[in-house]
Amino acid sequence: MTEPTRWLPEPDDSNRPFFDGARAGVLKLQRCDDCGGWMFPVRRRCQHCGSTALQWANASGRGTVYAHGQLQREYHVRHRGALPVIMAQVDLAEGVRMNTNLVGVSPADVHVGMVVSVDFEHSESGEAIAVFRPAGTPS
Ligand SMILES: [Zn+2]
Image (cartoon, rainbow, N blue to C red; front, side):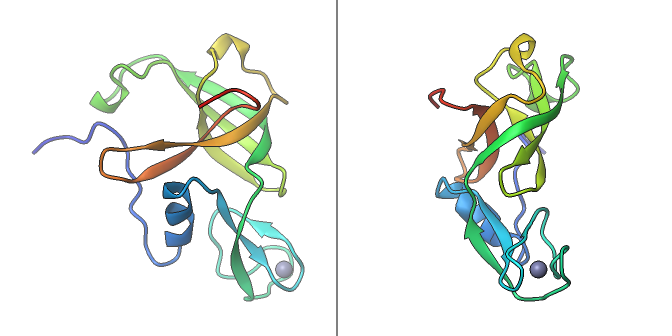
């Protein structure tokens, strides 16, 4: 059996719009029709008001780094050639926090409060994963 070289999403009915959006280069999140609140990760009910009237909507893709760390040792084949991996929690403009990776930046230059924007890493199989890079830097 060949080990995967990357983690790839395994969408199900509850989160498929998120991953379909990623493939299309759009960050999609759930938003409540009743109170306008945004949610991440996927919920069945609004975390703000309890409503079940949730829709998928395009998010801004903008946020700030809340916390960050880095992986410097290769624990798995999927880390080969990718170190250091910068792991981060990003506070999105919509008011939700997302666990993600930062790309296009040196670990030494990452800081809490750094303004970042979404980007997408595409696999050979067509899947895409949302990552973030410093705002204003090219993909
Ligand atoms: Zn709500």
